[in-house]
Amino acid sequence: MNSVIPTKYWHTLPDGRVQCDVCPRACKMHEGQRGMCFVRMRQDDQVVLTTYGRSSGFCVDPVEKKPLNHFLPGTPILSFGTAGCNLACRFCQNWDISKSREIDTLADAASPELIAQAAGQLGCRSVAFTYNDPVIFMEYAIEVAQACHERGIRAVAVTAGYICDEPRVEFYRTMDAANVDLKGFSEAFYQKLCVGHLQPVLDTLVYLRHETDVWFEITNLIIPDENDTTEELEAMSQWVVEKLGPDVPMHFTAFHPDYKMLDTPHTPPATLTRARKIALKNGVRYAYTGNVHDEQGGSTYCHGCGAKIIGRDWYVLTAWELTDDGRCHFCQTPCAGVFEGAPGAWGSRRRPVRLMNFAV
Image (cartoon, rainbow, N blue to C red; front, side):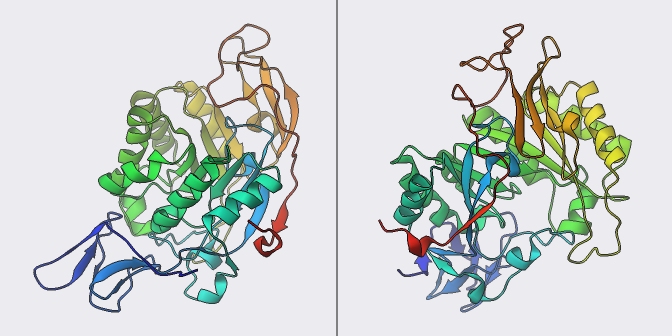
């Protein structure tokens, strides 16, 4: 299988360089140069994707680990990524993959059909493009999603939402769900720590909410002294309710020292609890804490009567009080999400997978 394929979102500049139009970074390349994402490059006067069909590894996870708390709860999801990324976050928690410049990182060769076949044999209800951002390998992700759909398997994008308008439409046309990292809520944060901009991410969130049927949830990694002020958390959660509505779940997750921010301390659990309370106060119906053991902060409560309707201990479901059509068992208030009657029972297991063991 050829790992280098042509792409269509690019144009030639008057000075002879070629500009990639997939993301707002708009990398401008001479022949043989790669974009910042590393996986898109100029070859033979066009932009090509160099990692089609190549993965950094496959693993079956609980869907809650993406994190998605309102999308087929309790079910297993086949997760994989490639190499590279179109942001440069100093706090990257997957930097060994996203910042990889070694093709050897891409251990598994896998066609879309093989991935769909493996997911079906493993009993996975969905496949996740994660670890690095699927926007940069969108052609591969789209064809995997299409192959999965033919087998009744959903496609999930775990993404920073950093993509331009036209490719955004094509990409999300094939996605069933997404978790979007809203890394901070200031332009200064994005420029300083991500070498990017905030507005394109907000544009993606608004597009998902108002122009698609994609189920999506938001993750905000809270970093001490960087994006953890009450003012910023207030502004973010108020914007979510105003622009996206109260039903979009928000996950406030804990930072751990990594990559280029090894001197920054772990996020105190109290900070996550404060963020969750702020979001709930501002009208977010489903706010969660993550990367910490917090059964209350990880569980889902009915916004009608306040009852616990989905209990979670880490990634294990401990309570289920939803009707088959996704309503509170106690007061019949609908719970926003994608539910299919009874939940899955995958639990917290993590199962590495080698695709060479599966045959189409």
